[in-house]
Length: 95
Length: 484
Image (cartoon, rainbow over all chains, first blue to last red; front, side, top):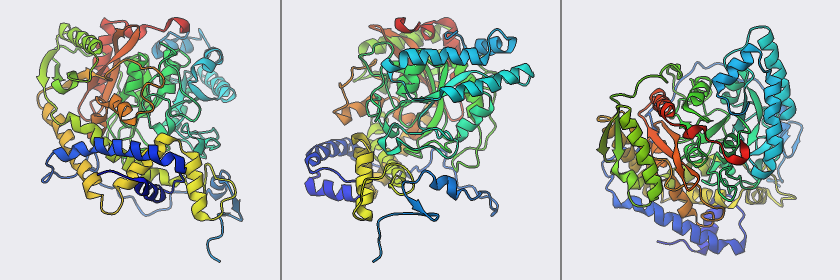
């Protein structure tokens, strides 16, 4: 299988990436080359193999339900591109 | 002053032969002199470094200094450093001043070490040549027409040119070990979970691990003692005692069984690199180690598996770079979607975009089983190979990288050719086991690394094996002529 121009545009949209029209052919070529490399996985039978999500097969730790973080809104918002009255500003979404 | 081990520097500082301010200034002067040529540092924190050095000198005066107090180091620019730009070598984070410290930074600060600055790297640690950095490529001090390796290329170049005595790195598929190999350094990727990932900008969370890059195994052991340990702020951190990694350095390697995987010495390996690595293994034999040929049959699956797992995880991790809360934001967005897509389109470089797209595709509806699930199953096969091998051998040895340092532009336009650079390193990240690269000799004037792979939490044995080799050889003490 091979990705075409439409596939690349769809993937870029899913990834929320604006890409230039002129760049689509080289992305299509590179992505297809990478997928061909990845395709080598299909040569092995993995039907009875348990997927490995974590190298040590660890489980999520639990901790007491206590407040451990302090409010640092001002510090964190000091590096935001645009804020006002403690909220992050983006273009209007709801009319 | 810049060719001393950490132990020698520590002794000189404690005895008052030099002050931390003098030592720090010496390195800052070297950075000033050489960084324009090498591009190893993105940010030099000179004023802060001298303040830290003064504080260290007070600790010496009041006899409260520790072993590493006052010794300078450099951090890869992937670690959040409070109040200091943390760029991950991306336009996206060019103006990002981290609001907190990574745990690794916190621990190193607490040891009294002095931070010289933040080192260059491949953008978001994606690359094997340091050519994807927004701040331009880093040069290899052994031949400035060649790459230092990546992604921790700035840390590698800085240490190789003696602009820093030691540095931090991170390794997702070889990013500590491959640049160490290409720059004649000792670099350790610890067991997954050994070192906290908190505050280390995430690339592929199930593979990323921080470790030391140094001129010797002994120095790496000193820094590992500080970097390692449980951190409740990292959900995958392992709660397990940290041994003193310097305590086992002098153990004998007599009787140690070394496995040589036949898959690591086949097609694709430069014949001169092979000969260099084989000679290093002979040295171990002469020290009383036993050699056993082994097989890791699923080795060839590692790169295909990695290029599903790593992009999938990176596409998820990098979704936080949205132009809203921090990082680059496009001018005059017409709506929210335009804000997201243009901020990300402008902020990320080509290689990062490629990997995000591969990941988004692999995780998209209808493809999850064929790609991500399949890759997780292949990952198990790769890991099982190592566990089978460790029933018969103590460590596994082979090359770190298939070739010595290559020239700029040689592979950067062919992603797949670049990916093959990590063919011997990626599998240990997938398995989560530790591995070290140590200097093993030179091919046509360029350094070659020997890779030593151990089982889970066997960092002490790897550092010991590296140190014992470095007692027999002086490759690791060689410095490029222009930076002596």
